[in-house]
Amino acid sequence: MTTAPMDQSRLDDTDAVAPAGMLPARKPLGRRLESWLSRLSTRNNFWHRVCSLIWLPFAFRSGISLRRIDAKRFSAVLPYRRFNRNLYNAMAGAALLGNSEVAAGMYLFAECGSDYEVVCKNMQYKFLRPCYGPAVYQVINAEDVQTMIASGGEFNVDLELEITQQHNRRGKQRELRVGRCSITFHCTPKELAAQLRHRRRERQEQRSTSA
Figure (tube, rainbow, N blue to C red):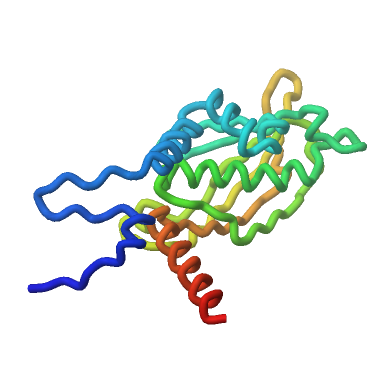
């Protein structure tokens, strides 16, 4: 049984598959460092804020904090600070909308791990009432991400978030629903994304040489 020779340029851009009985080839240093930073950003709120300061300055300025309640429940809290408020002293719509993507993306990123690229494709936010306190994001409906990962390849995942306001009245804490968000993400394995970028560069090079 013979196999077709593998393109050497493709080997340089992606990880080679090791034959049976041999250890798999180590990933390039850049990819290993990226995976380590990705895992570090979801470890706790301290490292999340450090990574946000570099790559997500909007999330860092807003002060959103993320917390996993259990294996299936997740919440994020957007503080009621001056940066997040508008002229009417209510939580700004842009802050509520923008941090919806941050909260949902971090939830999905924790589910997928560091081997996937996660990109927002579509988002719809419905404002229900003004928010005059800290906003709490909760994922109330999510597709089975682990089943999609097990099937392999690219996939879309739909999430639904409920946004509530923390409200203290007469010593009792209540939550008033202020918004609802439906969001769709596209998830691509980083290995596959690297192959697609490599093919795109090859096509561009072929067009430039033929021209």
